[in-house]
Length: 449
Image 1 (cartoon, rainbow, N blue to C red):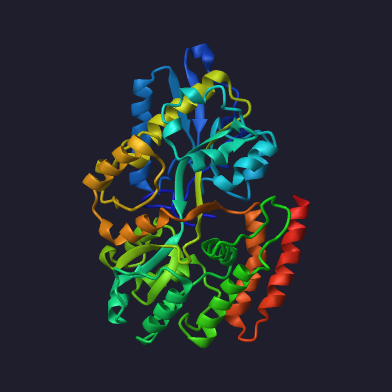
Image 2: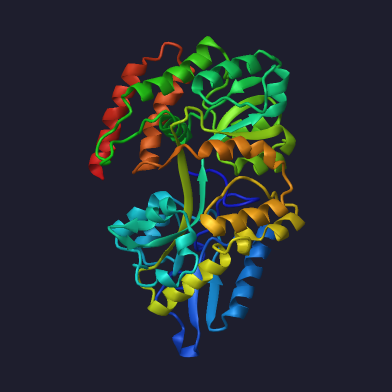
């Protein structure tokens, strides 16, 4: 689940516009009679995101100039992948030739037989072997490759350095355990004047999302390894809910207003009234540009608990009806657009800096080896945010297990919302019963497949 962040300045964007006729969206016509291979692609920024849209269009024009036999037709809408229409577009053959997916949807697209097998062609993707293997594996099903990762993120702890200092805490030594989070939150809340030490989501499936991240952080999981049963009624699951309950009711460090969603928490952090919350790095520019925050006050630490962190991201898959020429053209386009270190739509840091977009955030970090080194070098040379504020996150992430979201994530998150909201709104919430009831509901979801 990714609420924010496609990249620097706007939320995740675009599938084929619903206003377009189905024939304009679908695949199968590569325009070979004209001597050109035509591909439709999605996730172009909307007109409202003027700067990023212009970058996207510039990069397509540059690609077509270098590859005169390829014609790229980009579609935009909001968001990149709309859960309400995604399955219908797949079933109706309306997907673009090269289409955006969240990591969590990769296997589903394969299972419903709507993805082209890229295995025979992937050797032509210059960047493929430089991408982190754990991200590549997300799009590999039964030994076959069905998609290409484009961005990846991991969860961490955003905190306010100014409030840490006011509370007598060392902003260069953020908490690394949930016990330390609780202690620090209590000190920050003691500052008064409406200051909240720690905030968490508990509505619109976002509470379940964070419950999952908090389980991972302590070495737990939401479902069993075979994906058939819930695994939340465990010591780790109990610890997650007990900690939230105690911070809310014993310490009063989470404030009285609950049933929060991401925008509520971002407003609190941006206004300087919140000490800590869980998020990916892409929240930081939103806090500054939209919520009134200041880069110098915002820092990032790894997930407390020291065991694991939730990862997510996105990539592109190919329509099952694509011709070999379209697959080859699409792979070339991905290489040029997103997968060249220090260049392209996501990697041209000099261009981003010139347009006052933040450069220097610790993620996305897609590559390994020499490719990663080059990408980081160019990013560092153009950094315009305080990169030292994110060093703890980079260091700490090295030892964490990176875990993707569970199957049927949104349905499971909806169930877990109930457990999280209960402990934050009811002082006498029965944690054992909440976990038992939620487990039964999750088992039913997984049994349906």
